[in-house]
Length: 143
Image (cartoon, rainbow, N blue to C red; front, side):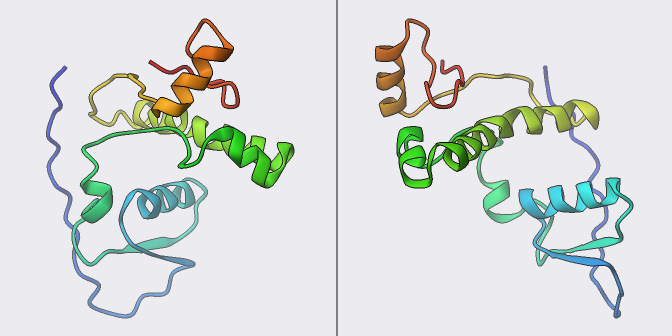
């Protein structure tokens, strides 16, 4: 399905003092997500961005949504313990569902697809532990 290009919303410069409950520095993924979730709770927040929203690293990733962690899930659990490590892993692998839920809820024009790629060391271990390619620690399907 082709992506519809939305009209770019105006992003006027801050030309006067402004009192807000929360000032968010940076309009990348994290800053915009923070602003969205605060607004949903009725919190007065302003995003301050030197360029356009999504400019920089957030705008240069090619639209990829990749779950996971830099380190192997087994190492995360070894370093942080089963309880905290398990929560960290579950959070990291759940971020894609969170992102796609936002896309659906706000009807954001984005290509739909759930192709996942996993790091080779995770795939190798997962294949040894199960016939279905899954990361044992995360439970995330890998394709």
